[in-house]
Length: 221
Image (cartoon, rainbow, N blue to C red; front, side, top):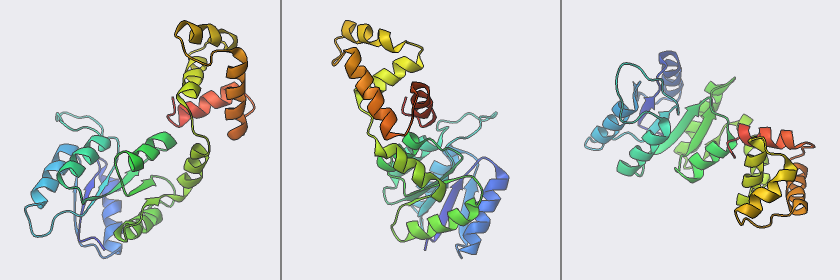
């Protein structure tokens, strides 16, 4: 189990709740900070001490206040912390639910777990910390189905271009001319219709509007 945990969270009540979860797991050495700059400073400082921070629990969004910050988001903090402390385990505790963003946190930033702030999140936090301490990754239960669905269809660059144009209000019949003018192939209307139908069928949608809304909600466009 972890020996020293750092919590980066700008809401005091949530931070206290997380500390209670750590106490329940017999993790007695924990610190918390409201600011990403301070979190990075504490991580760097701990590396010079006998027992460095071995788990970072961080939110993704931090509200701005009177104090200027060099690092203002959780993603920036994770990147900076991993650069100075590659062995650091990272658990994200956030209200975020966009599948593409969460997927990138695991694959791009190398986080170890993600728990969404929602009902039963204290229970999920305990399970996540226990799993990560055993070198396993963890994703909260309510998000597993979402990510599985998102990964069921791999959006190509061509797909994203079409959906983006529809999201911007372009009519489907006008897309071929746009693609042809930019030498994007295939550009035929039949090819566009086939791609849209394939996407909708894979994701169980019947209308283009549903597909566009889905891609917006999950950060695909």
